[in-house]
Amino acid sequence: MTDKPGVVVTGVSGRMGQMLVRELETSDRLRLAAAVERTGHAWVGRDLGACMGGQDSGVMVTDDALEAFSKAQAVIDFTTPAATVAFAELAAQARAVHVIGTTGLDESDLARIAAAARHAVVVRAGNMSLGVNLLTRVTRQVAAALDEDWDIEIVESHHNQKVDAPSGTALMLGEAAAAGRGVDLAEVSDRGRDGITGKRARGHIGFHALRGGDVVGEHEVIFAAAGERIFLKHVASDRGLFARGALKAALWGQDKAPGEYDMLDVLGLGN
Ligand SMILES: NC(=O)C1=CN([C@@H]2O[C@H](COP(=O)(O)OP(=O)(O)OC[C@H]3O[C@@H](n4cnc5c(N)ncnc54)[C@H](O)[C@@H]3O)[C@@H](O)[C@H]2O)C=CC1
Ligand SMILES: O=C(O)C1=N[C@H](C(=O)O)C[C@H](O)C1
Image 1 (cartoon, rainbow, N blue to C red):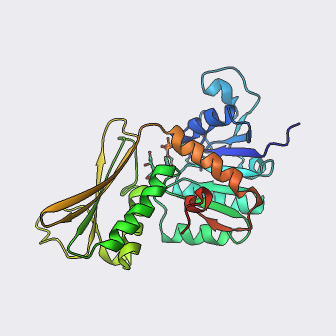
Image 2 (cartoon, helix red, strand yellow):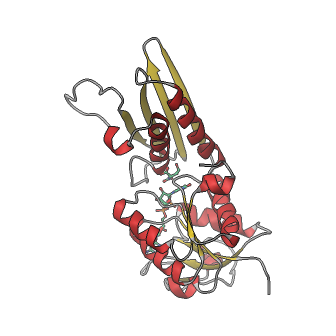
Image 3 (cartoon, rainbow, N blue to C red):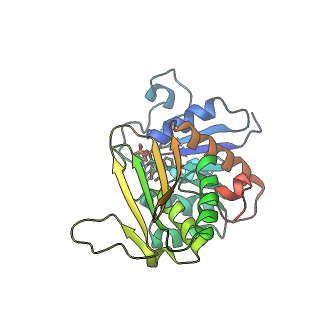
């Protein structure tokens, strides 16, 4: 028996799921309690270690999320919006800390997550890295210091398997820029441009998504004015970065009151 908090990894066969398992293997603060995949997935019912190409680990992959969550203190979830909303309700029932990395969540998904957070701790961020979260702070400061003579454009690049755009990180950066300017992002957001779009609207924030190869994640905020430009850029070259951030959040959440938190809270970067 161990007193390390137990973690359930959902979407365990995914890019982030497998990275989380690898990080948990070497963690001296947390342990893997269970591994969840979607019903019908080839890994369900098999030993996780063997599925990942190694020795049997004694952890069987399951599609019974509630049963898995009831054995753990935290759920780390990088899956899909539909799965994440369902898991938020189940994690709240199990009173497990729910760390959400899933992106592409819409307003109704966010409302259901907020409802679940009345009963349990939820930590949600479109990016779990220290660098990006720090970049949101810097973006907000720069946007606050500049007026609308400075056009703001956000460019993101990801691998060719990514299914949502703009990325969760790009939206975090857009929210930060809008907050710095004191405007509502929904009212000034321009998503890509195509055709006869007309001139750029003053004060708008543009988003552009590149997809290709195995790019882990790159984000750039460009402030462009007459005669000069400022570039703020973050490059992620290792998904382990996001997994380690998620583990930190799972541990941080253990003694917190129910509610919704983000990585700025976890990293102590303030709001
Ligand atoms: N916040 C952050 O720092 C990061 C967020 N992400 C986000 O995490 C999500 C996953 O990314 P990847 O791992 O690259 O995707 P992926 O497609 O490799 O993995 C997703 C996994 O979820 C599983 N899944 C889907 N529905 C499920 C269900 N109902 N129950 C259990 N498992 C289910 C899939 O079978 C798959 O194995 C995306 O939304 C991505 O944008 C990715 C990296 C970092
Ligand atoms: O899908 C990914 O891979 C990533 N998704 C997150 C996002 O949407 O910003 C974080 C990171 O950029 C990798």
